Image 1 (cartoon, rainbow, N blue to C red):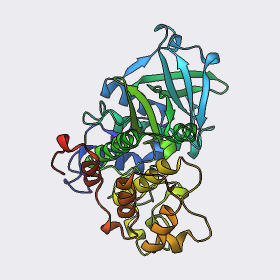
Image 2 (tube, rainbow, N blue to C red):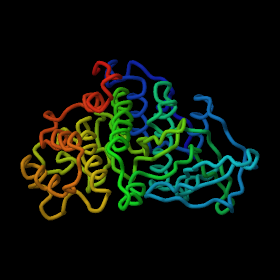
Image 3 (cartoon, rainbow, N blue to C red):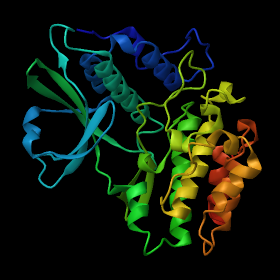
Length: 354
C-alpha cells in the first residue's frame, strides 16, 4: 500500500527547482514527479490538512447515484447528500479502488486517476483559488468502502453544474445567444484561466467540455474545470495532456514551437478555439486532421479557415479580433490571458493588466 510521502507536503519552499516557484507550483510539480507513491491515504492527508469535510458513508445511497460522465481516469456521478435533503452534488471517483494491504490489484491507471484527483484538490483548495467564481468549488471528500477486492475508492464532492459549455451551446443553436451573454461567458472563462496562470498553473486542455456552467448569485457563470491534468511551465518532463481538436501548434511534436508546449500561451490558443466554438455553437471541429499542421502554422490560412465558418450574421466583431490574436502560430506573439480579460471587461470596471 502506498503511504503518505513528504513529496506531497502542503506547503514547500526552497525546492531544487529554485525558490522562484510558488508553493502551488512546487506542490503540483512534486505530485507529478512522485505519482508512483500515490495512495488513497494521500487524499485523506490532503483533506485533513486543507480543512475539507470528510463525509461518512452514511451520507450517500450509492445505488441511487446517476452517472454524469466518465474519462480515462475517473467517473463523475450525481448524488444527493442523504442527511441534507435536497442538496445534490457531483462526485468524482477514480476508475478503480485501492487495497488496504497490498498493491497486487493496483496498476498505473489507478495511480494516475488518484494523482489527478489529488492534484485537482490541491489546486482548488488553494486560498487564492478556492472561492474564485470562475473555478469549480470543492465541498468535501468521501471514502467509498469496497469488498471485491477489499479496498477504498476515494471520491471528491463538487458543486453540481447546470451543464457544460458544449451541451449548452448545442441546446442554444436554434434560439441563439445574445452578444452580451456571449461576452460575459467569455470573460468568465478568461478570468478562470487567468486565476490559474497567476498561480503558475497551465491548464493545457481548455475546451467547451471542460467549461462548466453554474447559477451563482442568480447569474449564469462559466468556470474552467477538469484541473487534474494541469501542469506547470517548469516541469522537468512530460507534456501537459490536451485534446487534439483544440490543441495549439506547439502541441504537435514536429512543430518548430514544440519547446513552448507547457507554457501559458498554449491556453490562450485554446481559448481562441473556445471563442470560435461559442460563435459557431459547437457545430463542427475547428480543424480537419489532414491539413491541421499546415493550417495551424500559417497565420493567414488559420484565420481564413476558422473565421470563414463563423455565421455571416454574427455581429461579435470583438470575438473575431480576439480569435485572430489567439491563433497566432508563434506562442510569443499571442496576448496574455490577462490582456484578454481586460479587453472584455466593461469600461467602467477595467483594472490594470498584471
